[in-house]
Image (cartoon, rainbow, N blue to C red; front, side, top):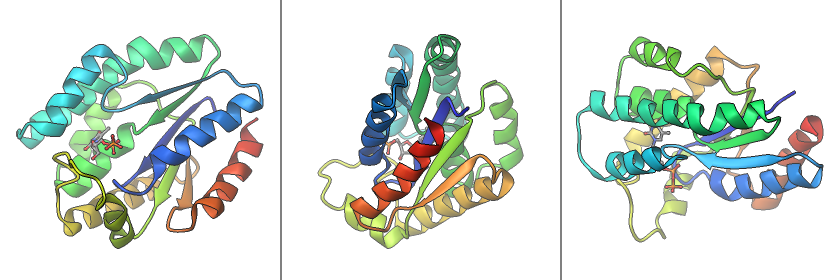
Length: 199
Ligand code: TYD
């Protein structure tokens, strides 16, 4: 059974909008669902989030802070919730580190795999909201304040998207690839069929 579910995609793919709806749909079917996010999800994680999204830093520091936030998140929130029989949905998780620090910024993939070993818990299912970068950029253009990642240029996001595709190819069973370029209703249809298989 899929109890730990993660949502992934480039900035502007629309995953956060769909996440709220998806969690409600699972609750309506009787599941006890908690929603959380990365970087963040704990008091320490939220402090790390503020730092890593806004303060310039070396790539190694950026990757390690993402994983520090994640390890705290697993120990304090995700593992206890799963042990209590809850369904956990996280807005981003380890795949984002591979896509952004690995694909986007060029950090060595194997180094990231070493960091991933510290984490301990792997998602049962990951919904990847895939969208052409021009579409994602257009959706972001109405945001007034953009963080350090959102301020990057188009080529950066092309590399992030390629990083996600590499992750999908490495573990196709875990991923559900959602065509997030479609209209909201059509994306919802894709999600409804996934909800039906979970609960
Ligand atoms: P995001 O999840 O898009 O939040 P919001 O919708 O509030 O903007 O923002 C988190 C940013 O952090 C996003 O640009 C991707 C980046 N990120 C990484 O670079 N590595 C990671 O491991 C994680 C979890 C996020």
